[in-house]
Image (cartoon, rainbow, N blue to C red; front, side):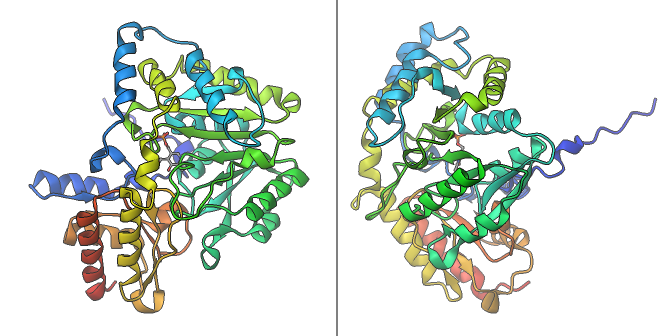
Length: 407
Ligand code: PLP
């Protein structure tokens, strides 16, 4: 019997996620040969000695004996109430109640559900370039068209409002804001956020604000939640425990819905429907939410001027800036640096190959800028999670590698 070839579905044609891309296969092969690979491709705090806060672990363990059943699809009420209380503490955040909260298996699942509930074939979504690529991938998977707006490296990677305006069409349904930003580390100014909100207001766009790094801020940076500037607009704010609370493996996130909803009943019912088709998020991890939001403060000391994340951000940034032909906007938040390789010095035609060659030569795994929907092969993303010594050695080795690398 000849078997029918099983290809991946055509729906996946434009679905890319290079953070866990082909280079990982080569990394696994090198590891199987006994090499140690420094994996700077994912923002996974646990792999760099960041322990889970013990209150979170304790509460989850305590809940375990009674957390073996399905929960409500939106998530357990105590966790959703804790999410409500968290935002009540933020000045100007529009009021909402536990019914306006969906818990998910990480923000990732919620992004997927929201895009599936929102988009029809050809609907356009404005997404930053560079972006956290799941937004582009899930827009495509849902049949929508990602339209990338530029973030301006010359202006600290702030979104370019003129570019956004010029890309709005009658098919544009939503605009994605990622603040603090992955991969650039930019934290958006009030002026820029007000500009984005105004564009959404004038063009009747849904606001989708990914704020998973809202408490990982350096120097004088302050985070302004998009919803605080848009009480008159429907805004979905995404956040979770993976970064601030260092428990990425628990897969625990939430989305909160604020602003007017009467015009969006169908869309919100769609999210409810999809939430029920996945039954519920992982229940033990939902019990981590209340513990985390109820007072785990240790992340603040990590990103404080004397804290580990702050020191590592400085080391990565200074080390990258010291490499000839490399410049880097100083990250104001999040866990990444996004250096630029001057094309006149480094002439990279294929940044995926650069990442592959770096891996084979130096046993360091980065992600190429084009993996974040950046159009030209002249950036890399570096995760700033490793402790100071490891990080400075990695950056130094990157510099030595680039000094003789030609394509
Ligand atoms: N959004 C951004 C901007 C991210 O960087 C990440 C993970 O790196 C996610 C969402 C996904 O997070 P989660 O672990 O909650 O699925």
